[in-house]
Amino acid sequence: MGRPRTPLIDRERITTVALRLVDEHGEFSVPAIARELGVRTASLYHHVDGRDGIVELLRERVCAAIDASALGALPWDAALAAWARSYRAAFAAHPRAIPLLMAAPVRAPRVLGQYEAAVRALLDAGFAARDVLTVIIALENLVLGSALDLAAPDTMWELGDDTARTPLLARALAAGPEGREASFELALGACLDRFRALLDEGS
Amino acid sequence: MGRPRTPLIDRERITTVALRLVDEHGEFSVPAIARELGVRTASLYHHVDGRDGIVELLRERVCAAIDASALGALPWDAALAAWARSYRAAFAAHPRAIPLLMAAPVRAPRVLGQYEAAVRALLDAGFAARDVLTVIIALENLVLGSALDLAAPDTMWELGDDTARTPLLARALAAGPEGREASFELALGACLDRFRALLDEGS
Image 1 (cartoon, rainbow over the protein chains, first blue to last red):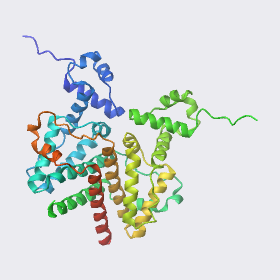
Image 2 (cartoon, helix red, strand yellow):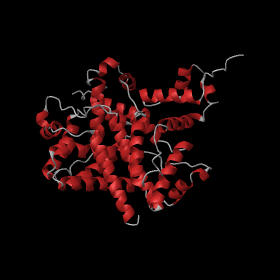
Image 3 (tube, rainbow over the protein chains, first blue to last red):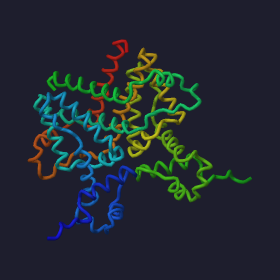
């Protein structure tokens, strides 16, 4: 019996190479993926739905690391917080994919499924349908900005020798900011408080 | 009298070309800038402090569009809100520069000056020095995530023909989310409320 043939290219491999290119260069191209895989560009198109299709494969890959299981299992606010933290960690692992993924509408079915679960959790909690996406987008803005920040260098400001020009910034830095986690949790808590108020107002 | 000589390259032109490359490709390289300007790569290094220097020129250019005049002129919360809105608009004009700029520490003097003004406004309001950068970073996370979102396509989710799999998301979309501005303002208001509480707690 022959061993099963390992194809030179498949969607998984295409996604892996595309993600590596995005991680390294902030961008990918179909010819560059083909070069890396040692196949002709035209061959790739037998496996994926063009460049847009590869973007959606990247989205599915990055979002597969998000644990959305809290949605529907925990109370809506705890669930949203757990989803947000996991969402942030997943995107912080691939910060350069963030602008690329945000520049295209979400079409990947499994990712749409996560939004469906988030919408369900909010509707079940009593949020008005018209408020649900406003809440989700507000949370995503925070999550994605913070994911980029998490991938940034530890030193966010280099004052150089000329601290005389920024004495207060130097003082704030010396006072020891609590760091990125504290900032994210502060804003996350702030948003959840406001969402609770929205719900109490009859949404 | 001869006319003043227009140099082929100067820092302004280098910055303009680098920003165009980043806007188009999400990245720049020193050789690519040299090619566009029709000069040798080595010549560029007479004008800028290497690649890192160009990143700081980009930061100065993008941040020059931020109106930070409210800091120190308005009450701290109104000032922070005005700064955040202008900061968001400036970065929304160059979304692909966001990961690039976030990946390097801030060194550009004029940009450090904006942070100095924000720190001063918060210290003057009575915030504890140790809380000041936590507050600023929380606000920046929201601003930058939302700037990316502002540059995204109008349609954020494409449900395709198969809305049976995402009926609640379809319902929320049909209910007319108030849109990106509402989401940003909701989260901004949430953060300001929480910052006020932090100040009231004795920071």
